[in-house]
Amino acid sequence: MQISVIGCGYVGLVSGAGLAEVGHNVLCMDIDEARIESLRQGLSPIYELDFEELLVENSNRDRLAFTTSMEVAVDHATALIIAVGTPPAEDGSADLSHVLTVARSIGETLSKPLLLIVKSTVPVGTCDRVRSEIQKQLDARGEKVSFSVASNPEFLAEGVAVKAFMNPDRIICGIEDQHSKKLLRKIYAPFNHNHEKIFFMDIRSSELTKYSANAMLATRISLMNELANIAERVGADIEQVRRGIGSDPRIGYLFIYAGPGYGGACFPKDIRALSHSAREHGYETCILNAVEQVNLQQKTRLFEILQDEFKGELAGKNIAIWGLAFKPKTDDMREAPSRVLIEALLEVGASVRAHDPAAMQEALRLYGNNDAFSVHDDPYGATKDADALVLVTEWKLYWVPDFGRLATDMRQTILLDGRNIWPQDAATEYGFTCCAIGRPSAS
Image (cartoon, rainbow, N blue to C red; front, side, top):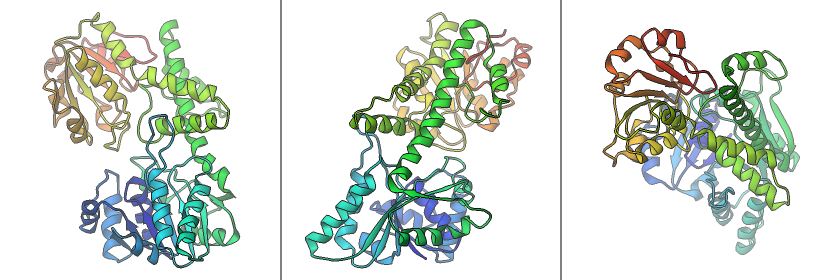
């Protein structure tokens, strides 16, 4: 099937390459000429496991191509996927300017029947606005062309996006007619062979499903962090609590880990956008407002623990940080907890020595102009002469640290485990004071 994807960002590229992998003829379009040229050379602009292999293989098979021309992309397609960004506006709403600009451009060039699939994360009612914008441009041209609009939200997770796309647990499709249903079934047939994964519904329900999923997951994270803060104050251990409640099949173990708060490109902006959309319809989202407030407060928790350990005297201290990305297997630092910690430490005059397997270039872009911030190619290079080591992101290479080496290299033996993965008894044998979120300190 001839498919065009508008937007060569994270969602568009993974979706385009994934559809090419199962045999569709995919053309990806973006206005960034440098990005398109890089993709044509087989160079990935995103950090994502297994993506570059898909890019190269399907480009070589002539199933995946790239263009900067909207006219070429529209002419190529039987189905066209809109996968441009919807960044947060100042008021917390989703900025739909990119989506509507694409819709306008499609309307200016459309001359044959087409299925428009909105994969960008958008508020309820956006597909109606896309349809209206396209029709407005067609009317201005005096062109009579039939087209359909469908909602097909993405459920990718950074770090495992290729795996999630190639083996989805569900495919949500919001449709307005049977023709759209037929084409979407054809597009996703290779992913639906084992058992029925496609859920067809009305467009507005599909749009809300994406936000609802992220809201539910973010709520679990914030609730668990709130329980961790209670545990600290009453002398309980949140890790034991987690195991106790996770064994309840009604709750389960996913997304109930205490930590320094959620970040990234999805949860923060989607919670705000859903709350904003609700307010526009006269409803105040008490729970979602609390979810965001708890998360914002939680991101300050690591700094608060350090302040307590150093009795407020952090100026001149060397603080090592392991993990900068908001989660493992990505270089994404958007709204990452590490940023709140770094900025607070620099503000009080501490020096920050950081390591991350993927995000150090992004960290240098953000903080490289501050002499008190440095990155190190080796995790233990960051801990040399450090007064404390803070684990912020639980990359696998940090799970079993060499406590003996750390004890020798560090100036003071203070560990702050922001992800509750280090065995405190093993660390204390080397003289460390071990702090964590939702757990009693050990020394």
